[in-house]
Length: 458
Image 1 (spheres, rainbow, N blue to C red):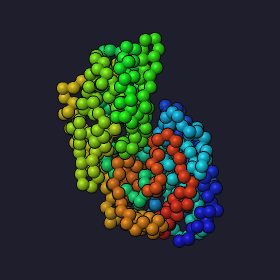
Image 2: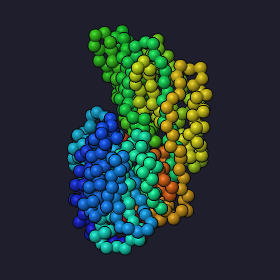
Image 3: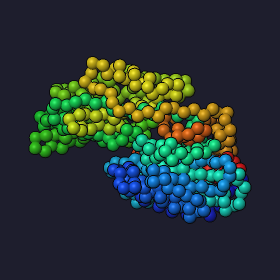
Image 4: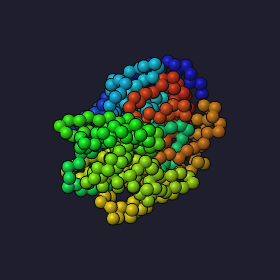
């Protein structure tokens, strides 16, 4: 189908709608009355539903947990799943991440990739299909959540508490092209140790992001050693270090590089950099014990091998291991860990291995949160149709379905896969500061989603 003219005609309207969504700070905050994930998440959810309604959809907001927008009234339903919440932004952004701005052909803003931009593209694709009067037998339902980036209470409320029937087939534009037909298990937990001494240590802001910065409070007497070793630490860790001394106490800060926990090799973990520095300074006391544990059981290894959980399989490769956050709360040091577990293993198997390797250490395992792996066969109608569309539109005839460590809404129901939106030549800036969308990619996104939605829905 030739959609070129309609794509050009709709382009500016699409960009403005992406900006509307991105302008809302929808990082999850404390619950408020009627807003379980805070005002920002509720506002972003309603904004998407309002945009869909303005394009002719019948919408419903399920108590600001989730919502849906329906186009058409077929007996069967094609679902398009996405989310309006975003992860925190970190410091040092090129521009305000909630005041979207076009710089050198790139639209900067938190959520332009993950996941507001792709959902707006799919919404406008349905708008174009309607305007062209193309026949579609299936109802198209956008299902939108408000806390995908944390614990998925949104889709649990929608499917399990409100008992909304799942679509017969679905996709989510919340990963990379061409398509992920399987996703590793997501296993998040905390390693905790009790403290008797006054330890000041913190870093990172979320389980599912590589920690961009971290700091530790040290005695001022260590300043000469730190200055001597700093260049070496920067070379080894890829992080930048700086110090500040106030009232006889020295704060050592590491600045790394954020990345999604599913691909920790794409970042530089500042918590690991700080722990390495503390370990090499031989500070003694509980802080020294913590650093010794960390470097012995975690270190810079991104596959969990040092803590006994180096799992791997032929389908999905190695387990990934990310320390997303370190903090001291109520006399406890807490390390928040994110693992992506190969599809042939259960997360409980990983837990048993970790707990065994913690025996005899000062740390204990607590607060597991598990989302098991998914697998949709390559020869299914859904996978084959979407792969055919991708190959035909892009000309990449050798493209194959992939397995990913990311956690998308494809796990929320059967017969659903992650389909785009990142093209292979787009940098993956999800969960990183200075997230941007190259506007010249929008036409290709639109061509792919227009054809895919039309074929699946007709």
